[in-house]
Length: 184
Image (cartoon, rainbow, N blue to C red; front, side, top):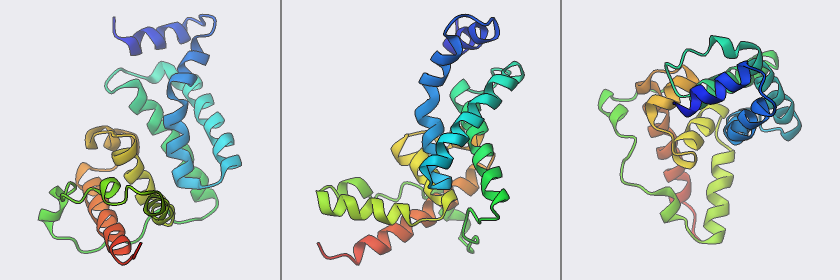
């Protein structure tokens, strides 16, 4: 049987400890998504709880059309976006006029982590990432740190794959520009 189906069935059957296992299995992803958008640990904690409450309330609506992880990630992403909307905070920079062929250039051969492997450069890289707008920071984290494929990120965010690729390309170019100007 599918592990996602087993977990969902156990939660829906109110099996002892089933929901806690679901939360433990997906809490890191939920935290990453929400924290990268809202940037406030206390708000992130509250919003993660809200996200898992929504997961529990709406779990019967999960249709196994995507991974459970993606579905839960989508709930977390939506909760974080609503929080930002309530605060009237922007989540992305205005889109530029990228060439269409740039949409497929997510992997442009520039390895950010390898290029900045030593301690000081690593800290500078993460400071530069933290300075990104919430959407770009979240997409970069999901793609490079959580190593999620573009289609799964699309399921989580509800953004088109081309839009995600465009954001990733522009974000990587911005980071490259920032980091190439650093003498360490």
